[in-house]
Image 1 (tube, rainbow, N blue to C red):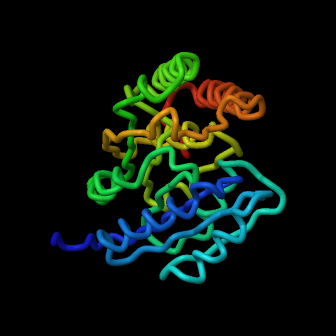
Image 2: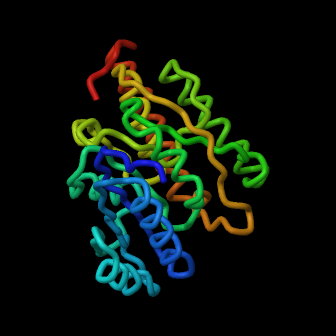
Image 3: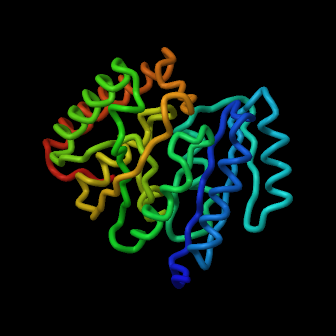
Length: 243
């Protein structure tokens, strides 16, 4: 068996009304972390769920080692939940996992094994066209192209499950509270010159996905984030901005 990685990692599992799948997600994530990492923690964030998610994450926090639960009341949004988890994180790197099982846990070894090779590990979906509806695929590609124009890079994807050095995210001012938050973080950190490596992963099939991206408030949040980034980069004159 391969030696466990020395890097310490805080894994944030954010969930909103995911009682159908969240227990599976947490157990599989914990199993991978326990196998690959010497030092880790799971921070389970229930973002104001109205189903059984709160009781499930409390039960898992009481059962699994290095695991604790945080409850938002009311719902504060995906991005805000992530930043709350970052604030609570105790370790050197922070990794996001979606409670809806959007990227199955069998992909995590490929992501975790790259920790320490760069400041940011950026997963992207190898099967993006297959797992998204035509409309969501077009929206996703348009969003990625737009952020690449802003950042000057050519990333495959901006809304995956990146692993960041914790101190970098904490030092970054993040305005987005919803689905645009990870794009905002990545553009700012890339423009600031931080290193990254991309990793191809498989997303869950259309039948397995439960994404709420096309909800009006989520689309509005992404649009607001894009407008903010345009203004921010113009204000800084195209130079490398401080995060």
